[in-house]
Image (tube, rainbow, N blue to C red; front, side, top):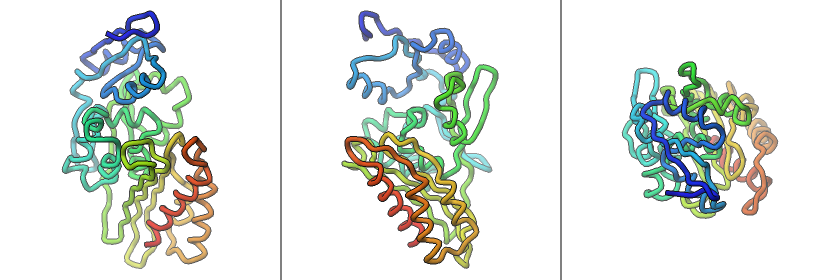
Amino acid sequence: MRFVGEECMQVWIPNSVEEAWSLQRQLGPDACFVAGGTLLQTQWEKTNAGPLYLISLEKIDSMRGIEQMLYGTYIGALTTLEICRNDSVLSPTLLAEAARHIAAPAVRSRATIGGNIVNGYGDTIPALLAMEAKVRYFDGIGYRMEELGEWFSKRNTKAIDSMLLTSIYLPAQTQTSQSINVYRKVGRRDAFCPSLVTVAVCCNKDEEGKIQHIRLAAGGGESLPRRLVECELLLQGTIPNTEIWKKFYSNILKEFTPVSDEFASADYRRLVAANILASALMT
């Protein structure tokens, strides 16, 4: 039993997505969905405060597992990061690489991919953005699917409060001998602390070196991960030369807008991201 102030925290355990959604609407802003609980535990340790009501999703089996289909792969929101790290379907992907660099094994075995996304600052997010992931959610009327970046644009709106994330969809990736897929995390200690910078690249070139497809994403710390669309447009359809690379580097410094904190300045984060992205693509 846990107490919040002078009140006892109540835990609800629904058996379906629909029931969980209805409970959240009924209990209001004092209620919080929980799966692995690793983020909530960290918040409790820092503030000694928590929600009055926990809605545990642990009994909803439909929100677990990985299913490979013809045109892509579905990942249940309750799938742990350790499973994402080791699953044979996901092992070649940037998502698996990102999961390898998050926390310790004991944490990964509890933490879920859904929680890492809903957190808003999770280290899987740049990888998912570069892979053009979509999210599937329930909004009380039915199930919807939209691009992860579009879903994040609603983060600070009331609309997000009515959405229960149920799964993530990864479109099938085209891989060639000219493909570049890179995920990098820079932190004070690898895996065991919040990242300073995380970047991800998915790029395909033709045999002549022309960039046919490119997706770039960056985040880290308290910086909301985002696609670097202007940088993508600069390189798309080109065989980059020295001048293009110079402009690309300059554009990263302009488009990536991290925030400073006690561990690193915004300028430092920009430089790190620009150096990693340029190095990955110019190799």
